[in-house]
Length: 384
Image 1 (cartoon, helix red, strand yellow):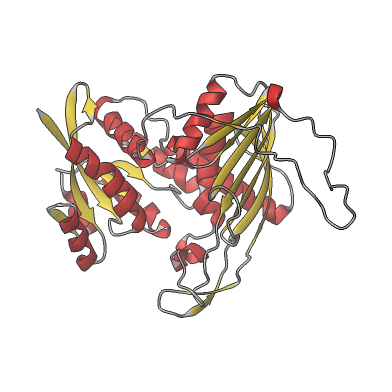
Image 2 (cartoon, rainbow, N blue to C red):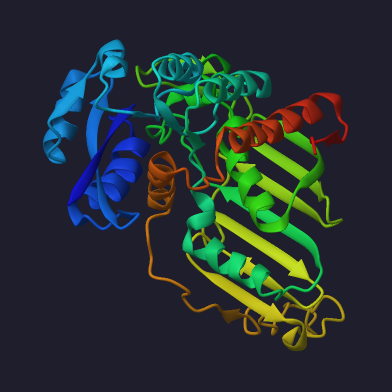
């Protein structure tokens, strides 16, 4: 016996929704029929929602989905679809979610949940008053590298954690020599753009999910590329930050840094790296892999090795050789699929779902704190 659950996917023609949420998560759940809830197979019945009829039709045909529409009101009125998912433009999200809550839909949404903490609190209050289930996409903790890092933390591999360092970024072309890899609204305040609201919600749940609550932050934020060209080949001024450097203090007493930029060329193992240092060892994670160095195998470094030759600097130390790669701890599953399976079970059974609107509000709080710190040049505390 197969049970179906109706899901409206708003922003279905966008890259994130069509690839991660559809192709890599919901379609495999539908095709494989391997999602069990209380011993019953559950499969999604999908309604695609967007603004471009041609693109909607193409995606519907690709994934053999019968129902799609450009009419938001008709989608929200359809009682066959109790879940509303939003992956459309950030600046439109608040009103869409308010309308979906008014229509009695359970809400699952991409981040950021809202343009401000206060707006997020209003959404949470409205959803709670109507007994509506709610969740925010928090996928990065489920990538293989961070799952391994989390396993190390639970095994107390690090001892007392003293430092951490998160780096992220790549070069996003400005649209002149090459077409930009990101839509122009990402670089406009009116479109809900900016690096802090796009990426720091991820860094909040990654850091707090692994290492515990953030106590306070101090941040510098800047715009590296001042002028860009949009999809219509029109020039515009960037009025949001595309780079940020942040220091964080955790409740545990550990300190760490976040360095993120859309204006940096990749010269490390991955677009994302996280190093955690502890008294008993260190871990270094990319999205896919993880390496460790135990205290017992830490090399005794006494200073810079500049070599003995006056004309050349001969570097003989290989600082990578004392790191050991962490084995795979589980069969790979797309990180977005973890969220969908958890949220569907939450809707059907009241099972706990940690990344609810409260978590989404906490994500926004970090972004707001970093923005405020950049203006005031001061440490900003986060709520308890």
